[in-house]
Amino acid sequence: MKKIATLATTLTGLMYSGALLAQDGLSFDQKIDRVLGPIAQAIEDFFFYPIPFLGNMPFIVLWLILAATFFTIYFKFVNLRCMGLGLKITFGKCDDPNAPGEITHFQALTTALSGTVGLGNIAGVAVAVSLGGPGATFWMIVAGLLGMSTKFVECTLGVKYRDILPSGEVLGGPMRYLSKGLKEKGFGGLGKVLAVLFAIMCIGGSFGGGNMYQVNQAYEQFLSITGGAQSPFAGQGWLFGVVIAIFVGLVIIGGIKSIGKVTEMLVPFMAIIYIATGLFIIFSNVSVLPETLASIFTQAFAPSAAFGGFVGVLITGFRRAAFSNEAGVGSAAIAHSAVKTNYPATEGLVALWEPFIDTVVVCTITALVIIITGVSNGSGDMQGIALTSAAFATSGISWFPYVLALAAILFAFSTMISWSYYGMQAWVYLFGAGKLQENIYKLLFLIFIVIGAAIKLGSVLQFSDAMIFAMSVPNIIGLYFLAPVVKRELQRYLQALKSGQLHCER
Image (cartoon, rainbow, N blue to C red; front, top):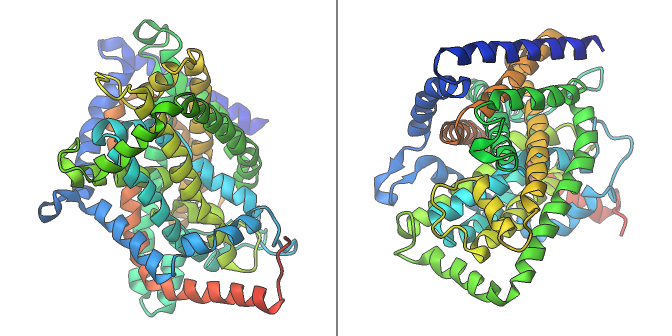
């Protein structure tokens, strides 16, 4: 109770400070945007440097495409051939109850999914379709399928090189496998540098895409159902942020076990509601579905497609898919490293389902709804979640914006609690384990929730993209070095199943 009282007191102080800042002519929102906007632009310009001879494709997008393609081929399409086994492991049919770890396979999956199945699927897809046209949907699906292989590699390594403290607490993620794994290969110095870089970027990503972007879009949807520009909450994003921060704070105090318990209930509930509503709209317009699917495929390769032709559509689709499912970023490996298992490959097989659920299923449903309803044509000033909301509302479900507002807030909430764990693990790697270090990070995380609700989408989206994509640079370098280790772990697990040493229920 003392921790809760301290948290409430601190956030009340933030509310008071925000009110003071808004008294000199500029709103609190405008002040924050003025400061962070140029910073976000500078970071994005650096990591998204265009490659002229590849149609100005950003370096970071090419980096992710090549890695996902390489791992898919190197592991002989593990993303497709091992999906069934991964599903069995997810639902506990291959579990060892005595295995070390903190959470179950299902909790690990839902925790990682709560960090990816979020507003990137709602607002991010709308951005992709509005910029890249229907063809961007095709490349999002391709990115999702290829990303399954990358996710398999990083989450296997997350378990392989995790540290388990005497208390049973797990410390894992790319920071650990970059430093320990590369040291085994004789590149200890490089591994240490990459681990530190990753940790710094992970902390930045947790403040950006992990909460600022999430709460920003949740606030936009909240405004839309409370009067828009005439809403009594207009210009008071910081106040909305404080309320969300209080609820997030109450969950993250309990650590990964608390987060796992919340996400295993919240994620399936959110996904079922959203997917069911989307499918209802799609099948209500089944007569135009063939035409819609045809436009997605033809415009994916059309030289005259929106946003710079074929390459532009490809870039848009891959960029938004990567931001949504985070394959190659390394964040999910932090959550999966806490799983109860003796075989690292088991968690890689569970994790490959994330990009499939996140991008191939949820993102595709969102895109189909937007394209079928036609709201992306002449959408004017609508962007992000407003476009998705309009698509659902024009399909005979006038009350859906209220459901979407609830879904947006829940998606944002679940993403934030997962990313708080990711960022805290990176923070602990840099500054050492201990309650003081953890509490400092948690407080900073909650402050950034308030900031994210207050600034404009442009700055938030730029900052989110830049920091999250930047994490993939040190992470994927390590994945290339350690791919043979993952191959051996997969063979070890499959051999154990084949020999009867282990078994999975039917």
